[in-house]
Length: 337
Image (cartoon, rainbow, N blue to C red; front, side, top):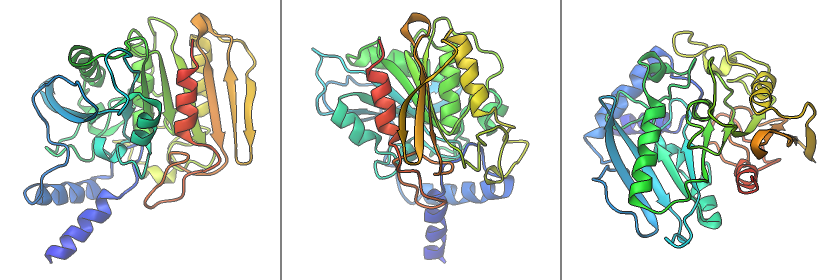
C-alpha cells in the first residue's frame, strides 16, 4: 500500500504544467498526496532567513506577503561578481506547478542557460494552500484558480523579491526581465502592465494576456511564443479540452493575435511586422519600430501543444524542437536597447 501511494505521488508530481488549477476531484487527490508525503520527506527548497548573496549557487527564501507565506529560489551563475552586476530573469511556473518544477533543468533548461549566459534566475512560487507550495497558481487577471479567486497580490510579492535582491546582492536594475509558462506567462504580462518601472521586457510561452486593464508607466518589450496546436490556451482564443474547462478555475483565454495586437498598440509599433525567422516547423515576426526602442515579437511553432519549445515534457506530448524557447528569449532580451 505504501509503495502504491508513493507511485501515485510520483505520477501526480510529474503531471505537465497547465494554465489552470486542476478540477476539484483531481485537486483534492493531489492535496491528500502532498499532505501525506510532507511528513515523510523534506523539500529540497527549504526556506531560510535573508542572507547576503555573495557567491554563486542556489539560495532559498521565505517571506510573508499579504498574510500568506511565500517562497522563492534564486540561482546565481558561476560567473557572478559584484564588478559586473548581472541581469535577472524571473521564471514563473505554470498553473498547478511550483518553483522547483520550473527549476528542473531536464524540463526547462533555465539553470543551464543562466550559467552559460551569466544571468541570475529567480523562481518564485505562486500561491498555494499547501505548505509545500505544490499545485500553485498566479493571479494573472482572468486566470487562474485560487490565486485569482482570493485576489492574491502576486505583483506585490514579486516587487518584494526585487527589493530583497537589490539589497542582498549586486544586480543590473536596468536589466530585469520576466518569463513564464502558461499561467506564469499570463502573470508576466500582468507584470508588464503593473510593474513596467521594474521590468524591461517579458516573454510568455503558451500564455496569453488575460488582464483587462493595462496601462504601463513606460513601454515594455514583449516576446510571445505559442504552438498552433495548443490544446489548453487555444491559439485563436478560448480554453481547449486539454484545460478541462472547469469554468470556476479557468477562463476563455484571449487569442494570440489579439494579445500581440494589444501590445503593438501599447508600444506604438509600426503597422507591419518583419519576418526574422522561418524554419521548418516555426517562424518569428517582430515589430521593431516601437516607442522608446522597445519591440514586440511573436514566435509560432506548428506543433508542440501546450509546452516549452526545446524543452522536455515527462508526459502529455512532445515540445516542438523547431526552436528553443530559451535561445529565443535570451537573444531577444540581450539585444534590446
